Length: 431
Image 1 (cartoon, rainbow, N blue to C red):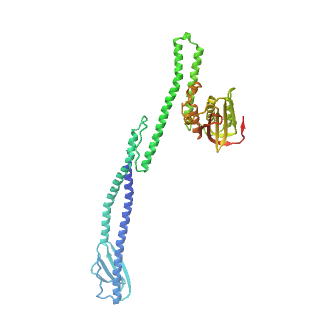
Image 2: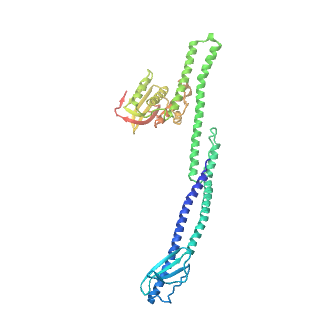
Image 3: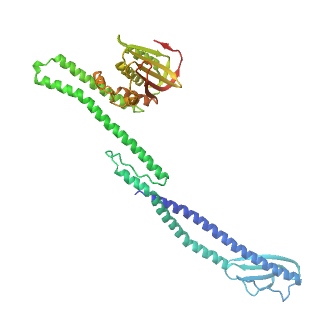
């Protein structure tokens, strides 16, 4: 059975206080006993000195020697000569703890030592009474501390219990709920703030996921509908179907679905830190040159400005970034595209410019969202699903890089990608 935090705190407090009180009580009793005994020793010594002083004054043991005990506990006074008792007090010490004081008295006729025995029974009883009182008080104090710790811990954990109960009410279908933040400003309040921040991130992720699923379903609906229509027409009128046209249409729809599924797979892998080795040294200039040369057509000029640049990352993913940027630029360019790769401030920089109509400043951050098409008609006609720049942003982000859009000096759009630099050799060239 699990023990609650309140119980563990109370037990820990009781254990610590028990040890402290027991040690303190033992120390107190030892000090008290030593003090009582020292007082008895001082009393016996003082009485012995008094008798010795009287002997010195008389010069010998006389019948008038005062051997009566002092005040307080019982005591006895004895005068010895060569170990033989020559005088002693009438009363003696018969019980209780005793201390003895011995004083030499040389030069006295008939005596050489004074011995005083002093009882400290009353002091010992005081020590015993103190021990009995502590025996009762210490357990009571321990129980009181345990109860106090139990109550105070419960009060301290009350906000945590409220947070737990509130969190238990939150499900994956209602991530908009938040926990109440205590006004104490302590660790519990910071816990509530952190939990709300986590819920906010989960809520955002859930919304993105829901939107992603809805958009993907919408994108797949069109080619699937086209395939269904073609198959239904072929099934109803098999003799009138132009099978070559039908197969071409089906292949086109299949190609669109394959491209969409491939893009979705790339997006999912871009967010997995362990799925791809991104610690390789990649010749980024070779990738830019290869993709740029492949994009040239008779009606489109593609200029490549490169210098040897080695980036750190995944070669296939970085090539996909350049490929998507070039395809996007070629799709929107009027007649000219320019690719630039260089190093700057410890980063590898790729810039892709086009001379198209550009992207409005208000839409420049939105173009990297999934399934965003600023020109819906043209994007569909070109077969785009609005995932190209989203893939770029996902891959660049997984490489600890950045991507943004600015206005190009060619009149259209410039997309700038920055990723960590592995090595650099400066030898610029224009091809």
